[in-house]
Structure formats: structure tokens, C-alpha cells
Image 1 (cartoon, one colour):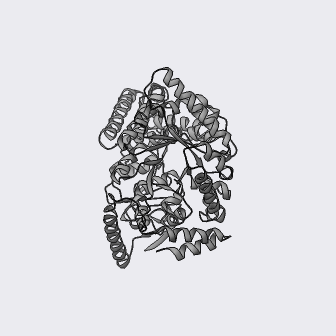
Image 2 (cartoon, rainbow, N blue to C red; image 1 turned 60 degrees about the horizontal axis):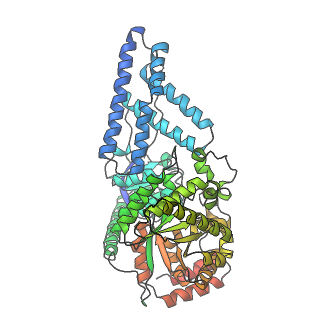
Image 3 (cartoon, rainbow, N blue to C red; image 1 turned 180 degrees about the vertical axis):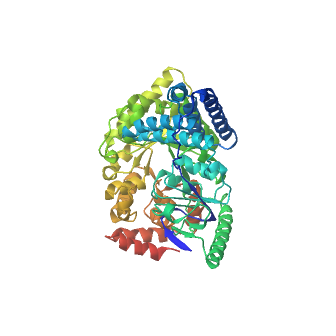
Length: 570
């Protein structure tokens, strides 16, 4: 038995069989074929391509319900059917007498090498796509099938070097028990989705693939951040008992689905959900969330080879708004940096993307793209239950400019007699220190504010939230963070504007009482955390919450504030 540690990113216990998902390079024998075998080799190539395409079609049809995953598989199919791929591999078989596997391997090595030299995240992802297709084709052709997610059963706990948000949804769809990765952080989008899906997960387990072998029995504790490899009987029994208790606790929480989030002394708190991708809407509906407080729209733009059209965006926004009606849907306009969009917007590389052209800045630099998204949102707001939120506002002039563009878009649609709700509420995200300090002026221009604590902590404390090396400096209970929240709340309330917190602080039970004590009006959390947060709200009283906030605000260190939080934990 051995125990290894990682970063706990999604709580819960998973007990199962370890399956390592690894894109191992398949060894190809570089032998040449005989001249008289060319025809047979070309036939084999044609047959293998058709079989792999059929396999992908089967995955799309029978195992994949996630739109993003379908798009990835469709892209792989296009790569296999690409005439250039067919022609170049065929030419190597005929002219150089390469075997199918040798020619295919050679082709993909050349293509991925070109992509990798481009030093661009989009092309790096394309290289990954090509490598995945090469692996899929060669493992099929040589009958060297390794672990693939569709082959695994529900007893599996997956281990992988790194993951994407779409991979997390695939794991969830397969009802696989848990997930651990070598890289990653608590606040990555993949980790946020894992929490949303209530999928036990660890990230940053550096020796994960060295210490665990395929087929080992493991216990993954997503709360404590540990993995026990081939546990002793006593540990297995202990965790089986904890797992049962966890399931019973979830059943208890399920009884709160129909309840309102009301404190013990009668204050009702609006509790909404954050979503990253449309698939999460089912969780929102299941848990009867009071709307979506943050719909991140970046999935429409990242890792794509073309911009989404206005109609494509409209369909997605309208579909979600219709599904959750009469609750509200708050759509945040695109909030990523140029580093993520450089391929589709022809941007140059930035030395420091987090301080570069991102958030509202990228929209102002690409007005046509911005207006296209706003028009799609306005059109989707047929029933008036959509609100729009602008990210990374740092100056009142920016919100005034965004309002002006919003008005222009509305006028354009009216001129064309396009059906849309004439009025739409809009708000600003408060996530940089300059926005906090000028939040009085910003609130005066808005219908609501929402504090994005993930970025607020990052920018206030100058800590890259995805950098494991400085994670110890990322402190949600730092005095500057608490005072920033309090200042924003006070300035908003002076202007009769409500304030929500949609960052991860709202999802952490430890901070719920503190945030409400600081005066925050609404909370928006990942769907998987909704009932736990509701339970916490129903077990606190506002007098106690305000007392906690007053004491915390007087402290000058995060350590002292942490001790106060400890004392006030129920």
C-alpha cells in the first residue's frame, strides 16, 4: 500500500480500478514492401480508413451526447477523409514502398511537427488532434488497442497526464468513478467542470503515472487530495464506509431541491448556477437553481478553426434561456485573452496574456465579433429572461462604451424588424482592483454587479491562478480581497444595485457565511455545489454572519482571518 498526494479539486470518494489513459507512441517497423504488394497495401489503407471512420461514427452516434465531443470526433473524421492525407500516404506507398503504418506514421509526424513549431496554443491543439487520429488509426491497423475511455467500465478511475474540459464531460457521461491528473490546478476550467458534475478529482499529482500501474486498486479522496494505491483491508473498509456516508449525505441534500435558500432568521438568498457549457443546463434544471448567474461563452471560441456565426450563438443562447424560463440567464460576453483566440482573430502573441488584451478589451479590439455576440444575445432574449454581463471592466468609460455598442446593436435589429425584447438588463464583472476602487461610478451605470473572485484574487494578489508554483500565495481570505468585496458591495448598494459573487469563493462552504455577512445579495455556484451551499445558507443566521464579517474586516492578515473563519464554522 502506498499513498500519494495531489491538489484536491473536486470532493468525493472514488474506489475502483486504475486505468491510465496515455497516448503512447506506437512503434512502427520501418520495413518496405515489395513492388507486387502495392495494390494490396493500398487496399489495406483504404479499408483501415473506412473502418476507423466507421468507429468514429459509432462513437458519435451511440456514446457521445456532448456537442463539443462530437465536434472533436467530427474533426478527426475530417482529417482521415482529407484528400491530401489520402493522396500523400498513397504516394508514399507507391513511390517509396512504405507499409501503410510506416506511411501514415510518417505523414502525421510531418504534420504535427509543423504545428508544434508554430508556438501557438491553437496549433498545439491541432497537433494534439492529429496525434490522436494517428494513434487511433495505427492502434487499429496494428491491433494494439490501449485504454480508451469508451472501452472502460464504471468501476474505473482514470489517470491522465492532462485533461480538457470536454474530456471531463466524457468521463462524466461514462459514469466513471473518478479522475486524477499529473498537471492542472484547482481553478482550471476542467476542475470547475468536475466540481459541477460532482466527479471526484485530483490534479497536480506529479508522480501519478510513475507510482500507479494500470489495474491497481485505488482509493481517490477528492476532499483530502490523496490516492491510496492497493489499500490494506482496513483502509478499504474505512473508505467504503465513508463512501456510503457520502451517498447518504447526498440523498439528504437532495431533499433540499424544492426548498428555498432561506437563513434561519428568515432572509432569502438568491442562489444561482454557473455553467461552462450547455450540457450543464440539465444539472441546473435538476437541482432547481434560481437561474444561471454566469454562463461563460468561451467554449464557442476556444480551440475552434472559425468564429461561431450569429445564428449559431443565437440558437445556443435561446435554447438555454427557453429551458430555464422563467428563471434568468446571465450571459457573459467573451472573456478570454488573445492567446486563446490568436488563430481565429489573427492576433499576435503577447508576452503576458493575463495582463494583455483579454475580457472586454478583446471585444473592443474586435467590434464586429463583439456586436455579433450581442445581437445573438438580444435576439435570443425573446421572453426577457436574459441579462448580459461584461467581463473585466476596469474603468467606468468601458461600461459606458459597452452600453453604447449594446444600444447600437439593438437599433440595428429594430431597423431590420428582428424580434427581440426591447429591454435587457446588463451588468459588469468586478474582478480587477481598479474596478473595485471605481465601483461607485461603475454601479451607477449598471443594473447589477457580479464579483468574479477567481480573477479578483489573482489580480489583487498578483498570483497566476493556474501556476502551481505560486499557489500558496493565492489566498481567498486575504484582507485585501475581503475589503475589496466590502467596498464593491457598499458602492453598489448606494446606487440600489445588487451584487452577486460568481467566483469559486461562493462555492466554498467556508466562505458562504462571510460573503453574506459582507452584504453580498446573491450567490452563483457550480450546479454540483448548489445543494451544499443551500444547506449552509439554511443553517446560518445573518446576525452571526455580519458579526463574522465585522471581525474579519478588522484583521490585517489572512492567517488571522482564517482563524476567525475556523471559530465560526458550525
